[in-house]
Image 1 (cartoon, each protein chain N blue to C red):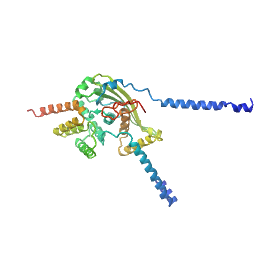
Image 2: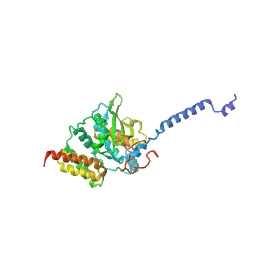
Image 3: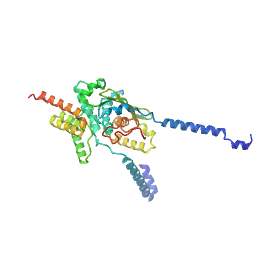
Image 4: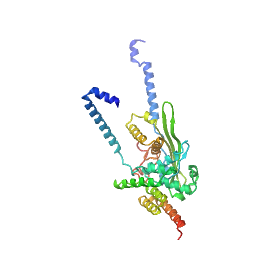
Length: 234
Length: 142
């Protein structure tokens, strides 16, 4: 092989390099592909207006998790356009009726919940993780929540989803302006209140129940986004 | 901020321009943030400390209804002054606290206000009013 022809053909190392770049690009775009759109048929059919949030089940060792996540659920759902029954009153009514644990509340038949509270839909929540894990080099405050919205008349599941918020996100995503904003807000709250998990529960709840969000809860009748397609543009 | 001071002492007269530049940068950042915050419609309600009041009430044990009433009435006054809407459940929660401090008339009034502000709450509020009436009948039989 002459020197000339060697210049006319791409060198094998170069081919290997570009293949690698392409492979990485494919991998990255693969990660960026959004999950398949949620099937909102049941949600659109039911058109709930009032929501009863039940006390969240708690898988974490922190006993405050139920009260914390429950108290944060009102804001995102109300801002999403729904009427949310006062969780304080719901708690009081449960107590007066001898329902003292989240498990007991979740076991009540939907028809009975509808009878007592007169709500269109119930929100069944579970706290997967709640708290700070301490390690030698770094500690992480993490809250993971999931929710299922059920029509109280038909018992149909209208929507379900999961979300999390973690202090570790701050180190990972400092580059974007939005992330920097979130970090600033969190740090500000953290400096005034000592209960760090409580603040991350607030963020996780907005990510879980806020609207409009991709594959999230549909905006309710009081939202300016009511009736608009939620998965149209990201 | 020891580092900044040391830079200032070595820069001397240039220090002023450096801080002006920093100020400008900060101003630009604030402007940028403001632009972001103005996109899309604002929040529907004035939340203030309501989620935290709910947290306190749900924790039960060391919640003082009177202290909460004071905070929530200040919140309501703030909303009135800025012509902002109170969130769903706010008046209902305050009514519950009024009942706890022994003022069922105020509780009834607040629950009726909740129904007026959110007509879709009628089914829930009517059940509460019914309970309140039956409670009072037990307390003061005619």
